[in-house]
Image (cartoon, rainbow, N blue to C red; front, side):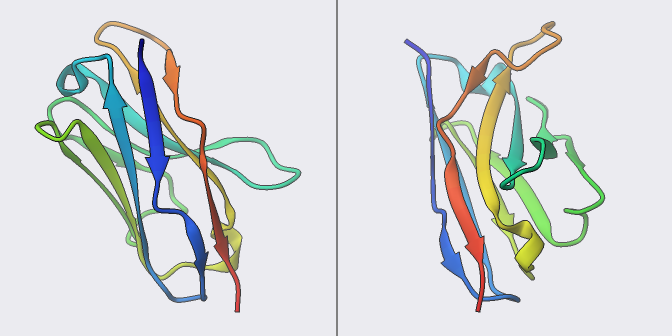
Length: 118
């Protein structure tokens, strides 16, 4: 059974930092592209960024320069380091995994809440 479990969310003040983790089980994570998405209340889910099996990263404009995605295949974990957080970063953050040759993300975590507020 494949599971993706996010953790690390919470309440942080504007300008602060958080590191989210996405731990995978049931798949060989090293061959998967993993993405981070977020969904704010009343808004559509949006892509934050992604990391390929080879370590290449992509970031949405809203994340560039502030967020960093990394992976530790030994620990079967992908991280989202978020710095200089803003109130508009408040959302539920999800990780998702896409297998080689697949067009869509087949596996999703349950999400972790990030709230940026003073």
